Image 1 (cartoon, rainbow, N blue to C red):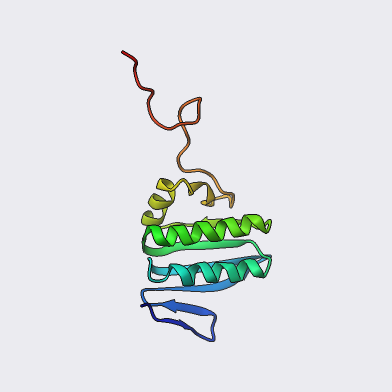
Image 2 (image 1 turned 135 degrees about the vertical axis):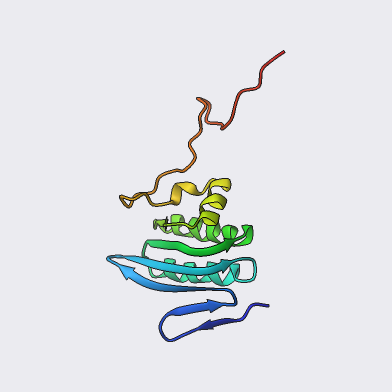
Length: 139
């Protein structure tokens, strides 16, 4: 079981990861450092739900994430859907290589901010029918 502690500075620590919430204009910024895995996925989703409850868009600064697993991505995706239902937006800023790779594999890379601040997809389908990859040749 993971140990979770919330400090008075607004920093949440969950065994091997911590996140801190701040503000950038009207948006909340959650800066994450460490390993996001199954042990803290629930706490991570709850932290994002708390941001959604405040009615603000959120930017996840994930440059400090050294490891991420599918449980954490699932928690992130569930929180993203909650934001969408509430008419709010989630974007990912400066994802580390593991985060960028897993978001791409899960087709969530469209949430990654570009240098200009808008989200752009990392992988774009290369076929007219929208599927990725080569067409099969018929015999």
